[in-house]
Image (cartoon, rainbow, N blue to C red; front, side, top):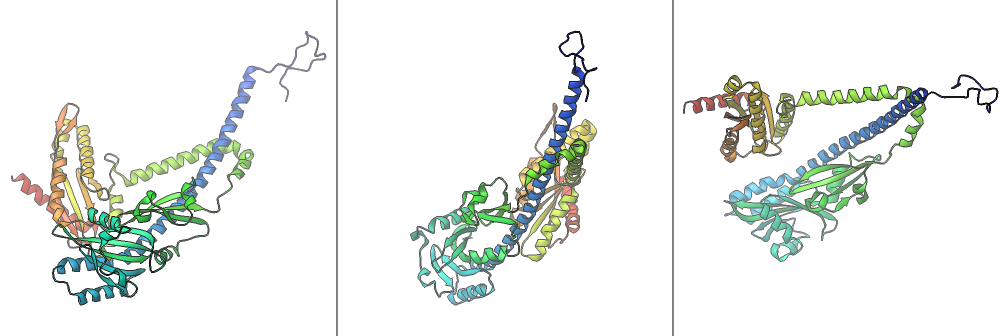
Length: 459
């Protein structure tokens, strides 16, 4: 390339014009070079991010499958305790040894991965099945066992089941101990426990989900999550920046799984693509980024209400339908749907404008969400209507829940210099007795909401 106007006959002759490169040419060349470098870098980074995203998605999908499998195996092993718990609650003051032992034997025959069942009356271990191999355990007093008493006391203090272990068993192997405290009229009565063969349970849960492409480790001994020891796989996986962590809820806490691909792609090969893709990198990179951003935005808009940030009908329908499907598999559970309509909302819109109405809706949505449990589903159903869906709802708490929601919704709302107020008419429907689909439950709850509105307006 010729940058000057000509070649001097005598470079040493000061009268002959030499080679001069205009500053503008340098700037254009630098700009072109910089553009190409930036474009090439973006292509490489986007490719690397795409590979990383694909890897993370694969790990998340695999982790979700493993979590479901573990939860399924745990539920199969633990759900039998519910019936025994109910029996002891009813017959606590008139227990027959032969009857209790027959129940324990029946449960043992139906169980999966269970080494033994035990019942402690007070703190003393009174019943156990099978007796063979566990004779020394009968009559033991938990406070006299320094290795077990802290976990037993924790379950009693929390008044909820807890999963402890894996621990080494005297009988051999390792086991998980599931303890369920029994309270009668608010007072501690006794403790149910079952010992699960952890190796058998984990092998069964993971046999169909393991892959030679994915390394797996699990930590959370004694249901302590990341604070617990690693009891499956290599502990070093939890220190790897390429590992994906997935929580698994277990009674009394959680386990944490770490998953990592064993066939990591060689990202250095991407640098060889620079010469081929630099000319198209900038356009393709921004197109890909715009497409991903647009898709994420559309997905968000399709699932969430833009004003309140709550799940919309589509997402609520999906969540609630899954819960109701689980309810059909376990009819002993009870679910609750609340239908909430804001009283006085139209008056706010008419008097103060739509911005005030939006502020009232946002405030009501946030307050309802704060008033219920974290795992309950709160959704904007339309206009000034909301629904709350609660799994494992207690009938005895329904009036308290409704009162709490109504109280927080009816608190004053500050908007500019004004104080806005709305009320809440609420109707409740139970699954499965009021319906086993979302549409049926909404119809029942909606009718009861209008009855509540009529009763309140008549006061």
